[in-house]
Length: 208
Ligand code: DX5
Ligand code: ZN
Image 1: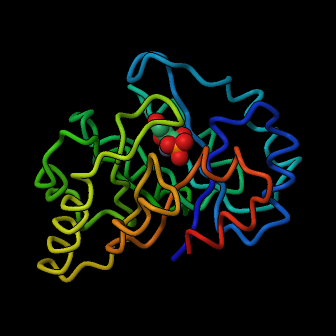
Image 2 (image 1 turned 90 degrees about the vertical axis):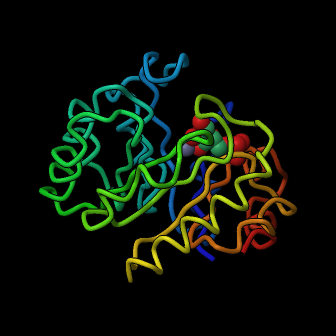
């Protein structure tokens, strides 16, 4: 199982990024919030881009924003493996997926807890990643929504039906218990469980 670590709940981002860099975590999950798609707002790109000073891990960027095309060219400049935005936006989805691909970066669609899996179907041929939200997007430290387990099974079944090799990621409330409900995933995204611990590596080992 691959692990992507979110630093959204960090109170000292440079220190925590350096500590994560010493682990074998696969990706750094970068949560970007615009204060519109979700009510919280993360720091501007001019500050976020300094991540490169503290980590050489590949980035897994999660855009919780209304207008992804404003952010895609910025985050494409960094050491980015995936850029993901939300299927609930409805408009310009293909266009934004193509924009991500035009930078040679893998593209993903995120899906909120109450959005039906079938909303992903039209985009499957374009996708590299599906990010299943196991909490309402907007903040770290929330509890895993148990129904996510069935949603993940549904996404896996959909991908099998379409003979698709799209990766599945889950995001929100992942710890050493809830990860057992996410066996249908390829990537576990975890924030506070890792960041609020003494040994980041020990927590990562428990999730794998
Ligand atoms: C929630 C974010 C998540 C979150 C994960 O809106 O997308 O990435 O930070 O953090 P935990 O693991 O604390 O739920
Ligand atoms: Zn996220």
